Image 1 (cartoon, rainbow, N blue to C red):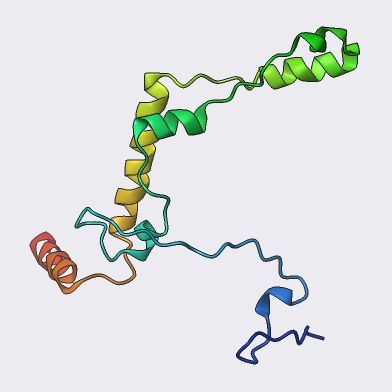
Image 2 (tube, rainbow, N blue to C red):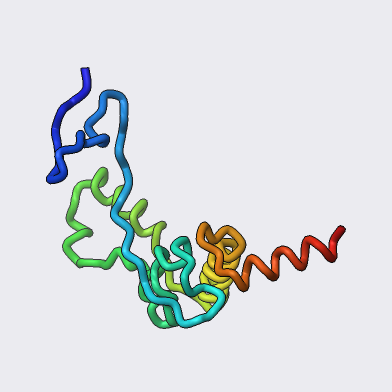
Length: 132
């Protein structure tokens, strides 16, 4: 019934079970400089924080142009036009939005740290006491 493919430890490979579609990736953890992000595996598994120049490079898309495209069949040129609609030259508002979303994502993971430090736990307990 189950696939008995085994790894080095002799355990069955759970990704090969019938009906199971494995789409995960192996996480790469990055050291964090900000104290509120240190030790949080959810934040450390995210990509490093990008500079504005890097964000612009990642967002930019230019389909390019070649003079020989004019000689192509109309049905192919239609697809070139559709590809040209994806053109993007990042503006300052794109960069600001990307940084805002990155900040929101990271700060949202701070309170969801599966391994909170004692200091964090003490702060949360004191906040709960104040609220009640």
